[in-house]
Amino acid sequence: MSKKALNQKNLITLGPERLAALLIEVTKGNAAAQRRLRMELSAGQGHDEIAHDLRKRFAALRQAKGRIPRKTRGSLGKELHAMIALIDTQVTPEAPSEACDLLWALLHLSDGILARIDDRGEVLATAFDAAIAALGRACDLAKPASADLAAQVLEAQIDDLSGVFNGLLPALSPALGPQGLEALKDLAHIARTTSPPPQALERFRAHGARRARAMAEELRDRQTGKLLADIADLQGDVDGYIARFSADELTSFKNAPDVAMRLIGADRATEALAILEAARTRHKTRRQISGTPALDAAYSACLTALGRRDELRHFLWQDFETSLNPESLRRYLGMLPEFDDIEVEEDARALAARHHRIEAALHFFMTWPDLTAAARLVETRGREFDGDACELLAPAAEALEQVAPLASVLLRRAMITDTLEHGHTKRYRAAVEHLQACAQLDAQIIDYQSHLDHFDFSDQLRRQFSHKTAFWRKANAQ
Image 1 (cartoon, rainbow, N blue to C red):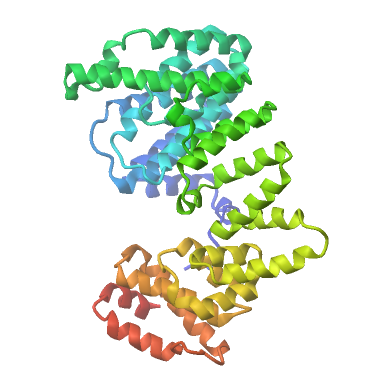
Image 2 (cartoon, helix red, strand yellow):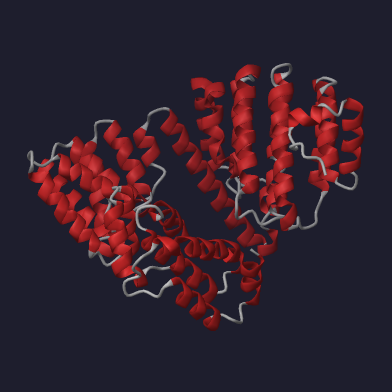
């Protein structure tokens, strides 16, 4: 076995003939890799050859009907990104109109592809986002007629079931220009009063003729409404943006902040406050209001814009008490007279230490930051943690290793135990790594306080979860 590292510099020394032979050998039987090589060969023969090969691949993807296996989702995503990069770098500079046609064709494959695969990780969605961004760059160079581009945008968005085209208008707005936006607005208004075309009805035919029409009309109204709101937003028309929402939708904790921030930007903070207060009343219990950070941030911005300092200060402290939002506390402390903030900050730390939501308390101390207080919280209330909160506990455990090894171990134990109790087999590898880290940190811990030492914890773990053989195989293999 060669001791040379497998990197580009060392591979170059093999020479082109040997590398070519190796590529043929390692890609044999790998259709995705072979397609990538063909694309790279096309790139050296000009944009016409690239376009020809891409259209052949698009046709194959369009005609395919079978379910796409989950294990091939990643390779398909890589292939889409490679095709987009090829268009963006090789076709757009030389033939931007051709690039636009290719990217539109690729994007119109999205419904068929996404209908055949579970894309919960949004592997493919990111590829289509990249295609939209590349289309924006190509249109900037190609400068298509604004009326034609407006018609293409409407056609794409009005039938968009998967949300692939959500970012289309912002990406193409420079190419559309003011004239194109107005043309698109007119087309959207016309579409709202026009019966859905036969192809739109066909999409829902399995539900029966009457239901299919109702569903097609509902999709048309929703998509044209969103399109008109996006156009209004680009034109700085706040009232046009608001017109998209019903009275009930306007007080949703998701929509109210967006509308309010636009009103504040238009020096209409009083109107914004009315909308936000209606939204807060609708979600009036403290439990409901906590967990709506966008609504809280908009409310804070609104009170600031109106100069209502006393109300703002009261709200910031109330928000901190409820959610332990560190930004609310920072703003609150900044509004206090000099030296008063020191005592209030100590009170805030004490409040966080006894807060009923221990994960929120840990997040506060880690982001404030106060690692000493975070360690104390873990050591005194460690049994309260939800070991499923890995996104919080794992980085906290790592950050506390040097300053508080016991706290780091306790957080890792919570994640290990939760993984085994609930059979999270996909997390077994991480749990084994946590157990190894606990063993390494054991030498640094002089006093385990009221907690089991590492030997006793490991022994208890083996007795309690001896039936989790897959986990112990991984642990013993390390």
